[in-house]
Length: 185
Ligand SMILES: [Fe+2]
Ligand SMILES: [Fe+2]
Image 1 (tube, helix red, strand yellow):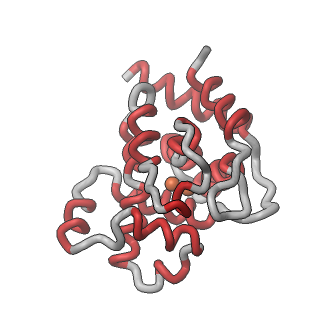
Image 2 (image 1 turned 60 degrees about the vertical axis):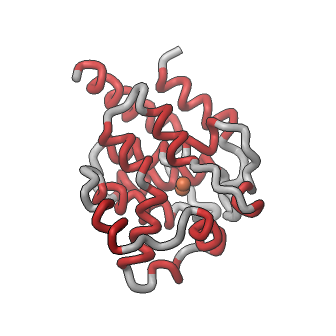
């Protein structure tokens, strides 16, 4: 099966679980994130990164409410490790960094923590809390750190109950074109 088909099927078959602590499903959250990226004029790789940023939640069989149980599933690492088999760093790095981006923004952006949802505030602690000065400097050395910050803001917004956005089918060509470019590169 083509990888784009595998991914779409994964969201169709496993994405109907709740995005933990929020009123939307995993697939709704992914679609809203991707739509926010596309609306803001992001390039195709970034749109795909937004769509797939939480794929780590779907790849393992951990319970959806894992953060409430005081466990950090490190979904950003699991997702990035799998995606690296198929996608370029411009897709994989912002995904790998999207939790780090929250820790970064909590350290540098006034009022950012207060705007996070309660579930996201709760998971921050498990993820290591706001970055230290040293961690901020390390983060800013990442080639795709700015994309990771943009992704983080879409991620934080993409929890809108009842917001109707384009469906999975809309992203098949985006996925395929990014994959095709990678195979040529
Ligand atoms: Fe996430
Ligand atoms: Fe997310």
